[in-house]
Length: 417
Image (cartoon, rainbow, N blue to C red; front, side):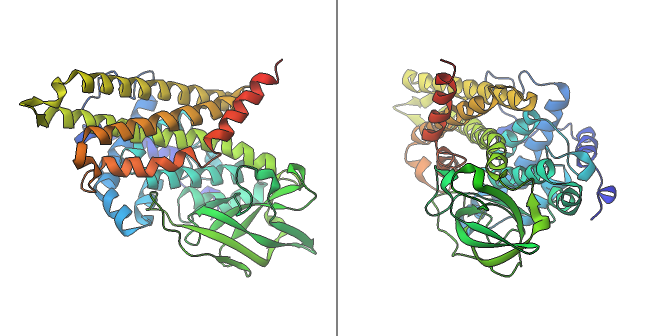
């Protein structure tokens, strides 16, 4: 699809804003002027983007969140409706159908969407990361060929870095790509791939050279390529609205024209993508925590024990205050990292790691505490809080474990000595 035929997603989003001034229903409106208000410090335009995302989360995602989880439904139609609002390529350039928004705008949108369904939003964030990688490192032909369909979510993308024997030590990946004529022949496998088997475009890190990061390149593999296959669908604790499978390459011939950037540039491409991915996943944690604080507050206001509502219990009041403080502190750090990345600051990678480390840890604690406040009800699948707990637990593991985030931050500090 030619870029000239793609209506600007940013234009669609901005035109949508003009018609959406009604209040957001349910938990998305309650407490909007409180100390945890996620619109504090945003520009008027960012607040409007946020309203559109909250509205979509409340109306298109939240009513289906439990069903998607329990039946393991990959909600393709819902995501394509999100793409019509500009959420399929939020920080992709407009000339190939992207919305052209900033990293801070993106964080605000993913936080809002995650109040409706963390698992689905997290996949959308991965898809956005893949689209951005092709947009940023691809040549004109590649951008024109892949990005418009990705931005419209007519096609879906998966990020392929982790391998069965290569997780935190990503530079040791073993999937090989041997140049034969005008094709790379890939052999190896990738593990824990979000969307694997159901998506159309695979952004794959593979070894075209010697050991270490300098021997890694990045290629785009399209579904249907001979030699590309998938493992069984994994059974997971959370993130059930997105399928997870191994992606397997057996003499899989990929055209040289699908190489992103230059040979040996793949590790840098992967890490550049992950810096943004860490902000994205931290933002998804913020949304879960924001929703959980609201759910906990509402439960305390109506649940009675010992003759009075739980909201009169000082211990629970203090716990709620701590949760609110953790949420706001996490949000401020995530947004600072987003601005640093957008501005290309030297400390951006370390700040992205800090934001991912702090926000995913703190937000999991918030959701877990919210479940505790619900008592036995919180453990029932009729109550959304347990799904928020299950869905964000993995955020402390993926996009680089939080132990690796500590390594990144400490190396940044020690390198200045």
